[in-house]
Image 1 (cartoon, rainbow, N blue to C red):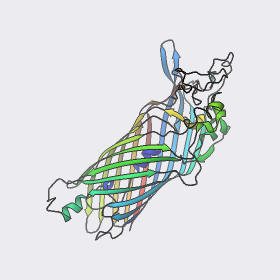
Image 2: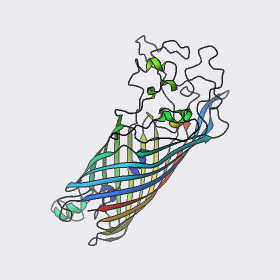
Image 3: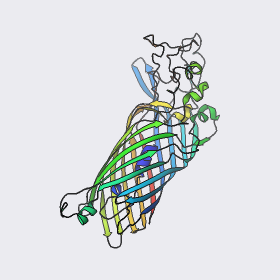
Length: 432
């Protein structure tokens, strides 16, 4: 959720003839010798997901409702942008989670509380007869504090207003010149912060509402580009971005709590699987298409009132991530890829050159995807086959210590059905 929350909150300083998405802080300009932008965006998000589970029947594998998952986020996004040169800015922002509350409750009859399969497998005689609940079917978790901050740079190689004003011999009036902005952002682990630890939730919470940090200790490198073009009162825009992440030092590793894993974890986490069991954030890519409708504008007075409508399509790759069942299980789970489709409607007002306001609402839908999909193992011993313990207690260096025989087997996996997230937000921007 955090990825599209931040994507929805990309708010930068406006300027004449430029859509919000292609504006950057300026410097060494006759109107802005040095521009400094300070912004605060308050966001409220609410996401509801039905979690189903595969069940093997005489007619094949079917899906049955298991849980209702609700996530409510109240966050304050703080942003600073400083102009370095013409259409060149250095910026930084950080999300402050005032409340990130997740809750889950039963849906349908369910099978999680009556499970008899061992997390280590059922090869050992008598190992799968007793009832072993997989997770508390009702529970809550809470996170607060700063998330990982982001620093970056944005540059506008082509500014429609500047080109028309300063280079008429190259871009005469009427020539279709579009404003173009490219950017690079680096999300880095929060210095000195504690990692978001799911092991304190679920069974470990004892039914109480446990609290934790929001920092995930990840490095995320994002490249982006955007184009906008003014046509009288309409300014359409298009944007693309792609993110490549990797876990940083201190990121959560499921093997830090082998007691929550299978019987081979104690040996394999320190052996052939060392370094392969931690947080693995997914690659992501996004495409945005939208337009601003200028209802009123006073260029001399630096005033503007406009409406914005936009649509976003975001692809999330597979990864071992913080999913809807992470807190309930007390561990990260390997989820399949999925797509988020989001629509946003906003109202933007520039009261003066130094004061800007924006309010908007968003609705997003995630496509259905499986939440438990760890591989059972790999040929670590070089024998040409994968040897597993399966609950016998025998050494099995090939077996993935994260593999959960209760949930990762085809026919027993958990699946997130299409979830709906809606949000409202407001931004106050001061520009100097």
